Length: 109
Length: 447
Image (tube, rainbow over all chains, first blue to last red; front, side):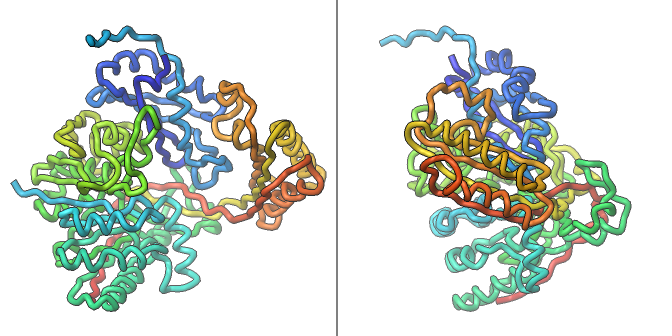
């Protein structure tokens, strides 16, 4: 299963810092996401793009995580040479993370 | 309980025009807010003002005002916007002229200034946040320094009876917080309510990004009607409770999912969202779907405001030159790679002085880097070569695009659609300024 099957995501930018939210479609899946989508895993995924620290914030009231990645935008949105200077496309890459399959109750016909 | 309805008429300077007209005509709103000032826009506007003292405000101000002034006047809707950019007084004068040309009388327009702190920053002992360098060390390259003002001067303008309030740099959520403070008589030290009002502002400030824009992912997250996307309305109560909605029949959707994405957009620590008015706490926010396109927001809070204001500092950073060319069909990828190698060698051979260079293949690995991009496996049918570099002069920057363009007659077979550009780069850094050093001022005009 991919993270994209159970979560959605949006990227934001401030200076050279990119933040990516990971939001469970169903808040019941939040504990699984919290357990498997760690700051280390995100840092490893973006090792070619993000050169600074990756911090993770938990917002269980909406079933979401927020990753804050430093030195992530080519020196900053206003001077970056990158095609996607804002890093707006980063969210889509994060949703491609592999997740353990979960058993879902079969709906009665 | 008293409630007001605030509409968000633009999420950035170039945003669509007609959703705001729809809000004014059919939104049953009392306030229409336009957030149009990106980080760098004010530095560029400062340049325009230096060339012509009547310029330096948002380039779409006239078009937006022409579209909404009449319906707003007829329905008694007040307008709040940061379209004043580097020159709120000139923007107010332009708005007054447009109102007169439309035959609208008695409109009171306020221009809020005082965010320009360039001279203050240059003269004092202040440091750049990102580098720790003293501001004085970059005095020669500085083009602008604007403090993020809070809601107070907008509230004062509304109290004085302004129908339209035009500001320069103001914290985006403050544009929305100010009408709430004014209407409900909130204290400027009621941190809990200011926190709630700031969340409403944060949710609305990017306009269509909470009504289904920037959200659609076909088959996973479908959104209908994006070509006629409706912009958001917040229905706020005097206790700070709020519902996000939009005009019935407009495109898009307001769901708990669209609200959650926007809540975390451009947020770092959700428990400490710094603004000039309050340190807002988003970490306990909950959303409830109360009906179609109606989502209730609850649980936000706040703590006392910071002693300093963030200042956005614009400076001439460098020059950037870029060239692109496409290859398609069998062998496109190999021809694209050969093209990159040729340009790389040419830039070295001809001695182009670049401090930073990028060689991208658009359609292959230009966005996420090579490791992530190879996961797909299949060779693309077409690729676009992109070479971009940073230089110390415009002339040097132009040489980069030239070396891509000359691939037409000197490079791999069947390259097409070459483009090139060179420009100076006004980049932004930030500083913190004791808040008492920024002195907001309000000027009134009548149509």
